[in-house]
Figure 1 (cartoon, one colour):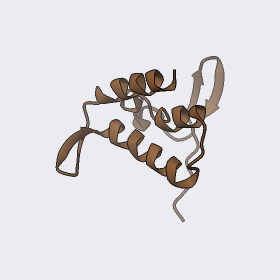
Figure 2 (cartoon, one colour; figure 1 turned 90 degrees about the horizontal axis):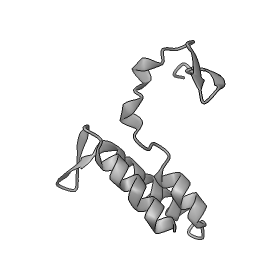
Figure 3 (cartoon, helix red, strand yellow; figure 1 turned 60 degrees about the horizontal axis):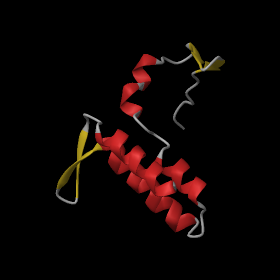
Figure 4 (spheres, one colour; figure 1 turned 180 degrees about the vertical axis):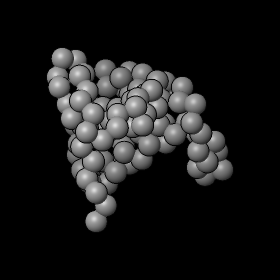
Length: 92
């Protein structure tokens, strides 16, 4: 089951129109991000279960569809009925 979910996440992220170069290849930005998150999970917790792998891989699924610029600081946002406030910490 988890491989099917990972493949679905990868397919969704492959549609990212933003491309980055990595190891001589042009990849979808979110595809590269999800691969990096999987690599970090494997480094931090080699025994991570399949749900952790799904969570790491899907952390930014289709992220390009909701750019941060659509959510300015202090703006109230409702997502799935939950009221959220976009708060950005100043750089230290």
